[in-house]
Length: 110
Image (cartoon, rainbow, N blue to C red; front, side, top):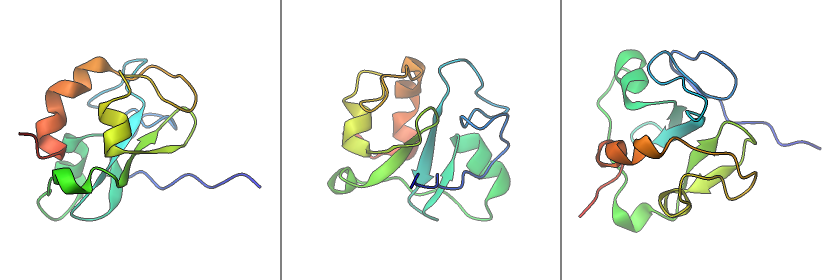
């Protein structure tokens, strides 16, 4: 039996989690926000749709599954995502390497 994908909220463009803010071929991840345990394609979608401020995941929480691959539907831990070299470890789909520039919005970084 195929596992159901988590629900992704926000201003989605397609089923691979692209949104109106980020919709290139490689923009295929969604991030579970710590504050509401809900997946959104990006920080902007969370700001526009959620009724609360976002919280960042702390380093001791990087073992949590909080990244959804929009290609295969597998969930990655934060640590897996941050060390996967912009490629899904399950299906080899390419993620946008520019997302690294936004880690500080989602994760506490040194």
